[in-house]
Amino acid sequence: MLDIINITAPIFILIALGYLSVRLKVINPQHAKGMGSLVLNIALPALMFNAIADMPFQDVILPYYLSIYALGSVMAFMVGVVLTKMVWQQDNVSAALNSTALSFSNSAFIGYAVASMVIGSDRAAAYLSMGVLIENLLILPMLFVMAEMNPNSGKSLASVLLGIGKNFTRNPLIITIVISLIFSIFSLPIPQMVEQTTQMLTGAAAPVALFVIGMSLYGLELKGDLPKITTIGLGKLMLHPLLILLAIMLISGGTQQDNYVALLFASAPTFSTIAIIGQHYGLVSRMSAIVIISTIGSFFSMSAVLIYWQMTIGF
Image (tube, rainbow, N blue to C red; front, side, top):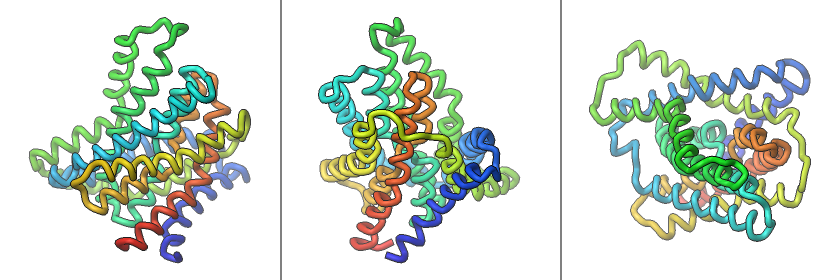
């Protein structure tokens, strides 16, 4: 048990430090956006390039892992649609946001940080890149198509898909994965200058990301329909891993490490950017509350996966 605490406690201590630094006015909360941009646009892309570019292609893209993570995530999304539309009788926008909150993990900021402490940063970055592909090429398009395709929007499917495609071409993580795969497929040598620069940036990715999560939690409030909000926030931490486990039972061919890493990423909280997307649709308070609940609860969900991992095969 002490081994698990040694893995998870530093993660959440860094988050707490980020929160306290803003609450105690040590750092201006407005700096969180800039620090977050540094992580997403520079540090994380450097981390993924550093890990993937010189790795054999067959070790970077694992069809089995992509299959189980995609299937489990899509099933979680569909459960969210049924719950919101049929049980709670809410509109398409609410269904799209709730479903995404149930199926889209904070892989980049929290999932990677925990996984890297168990399997190493390079291997964790490879799994992160596959998660980024599933989340950005599958889950986010489902969110925007469902949210935008309603009688009041006046938008066609073609225009929505065109907008999604434009966003992909500007996504630094997607661009980095493509460039890294080119280096990997053709075994291109990485210039020493580039390698040393990316290694320096890699060290900043995880701690700064966790610190930013804590900073961004300051000012968020638990407001709205708390029973429904709690259902989504805690549901993310239980439903998503359980449906990944179901996908593992349905699809064979992977390694035990593939299975446990998929469960670990699925047990991470919902991605914090959902609050920003919620703001665009006038639901920022609801989505912010979901982020708070899932982030706090993820200490227990991720610890549970790590305990199960350690008890069955060990680290």
